[in-house]
Length: 332
Image 1 (cartoon, rainbow, N blue to C red):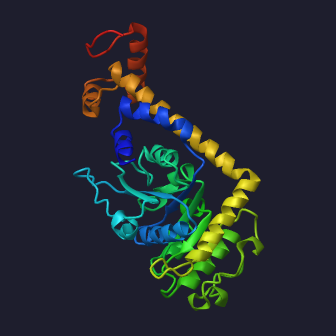
Image 2 (image 1 turned 90 degrees about the vertical axis):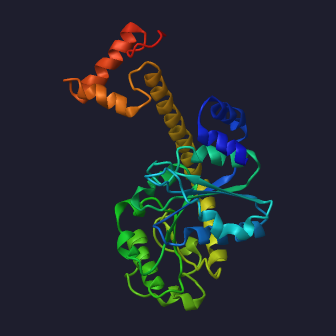
Image 3 (image 1 turned 135 degrees about the horizontal axis):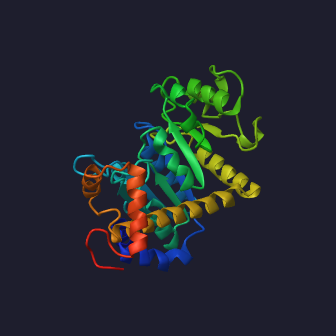
């Protein structure tokens, strides 16, 4: 699996051929997306979810996406260190992946790597995003269910009210719930996401009450598909069993309504569009319309007196008309 994912990350015809070969075996594993701001404890929470999922006998694959350095292109790939206790478990596979400069919290091949894990028989795949804030919306197109992890005392009560983060989560997890302000943050989320109550301290949500979190999420008032809010402490494991119940109930609700199937179809459509865009760029490079080196295209544009849209459009029209490379290459 590690070699397969490396081959896919490297790009080229061999990786593409491997995906085509494995594609009939993709699915039906569920994909859980875990996102949230840096420092929210996403990796520690994923580690706790691994324990709960393994107790249920599931085989779990984890794709932990780390940011790449804008200078060296490398990445620390340190998320695996927080999940080290599962390293010897043959029912767990953990892979760190670098963004390689791609914005949006994921790498371009994350969904294909998830497919490799599905083909290998893993029943659950967890994708942990970079955690760069509101650019995390790509996880919506890659996961069946999205968990947004927030932490009290870090300004998340304001951050959570912003449009991007408010629209991507199915479950909002107030992590590190033993810290002051956890119940207040949960109350703010309830008010903002579900229109329930007043954003003030709710005694039923206080960490000392055993993370009761107002009971069964299916009995809470509000829209049927309103996001759920859960308190948890990934460090000591409290609230994780309840979180798993909420996760399973949310997935069942999405399945019954047909939303889960719609999400998976949208994911396939997004993947096809990404592949099409890469193929078109390859076609443009092959015909010299877009050089392999972006700086070369810029130099040619700087020597030209046309605007950027006209510059590209007329290069494209000329390539189609002549049927050969614009930069002196062999004809096609």
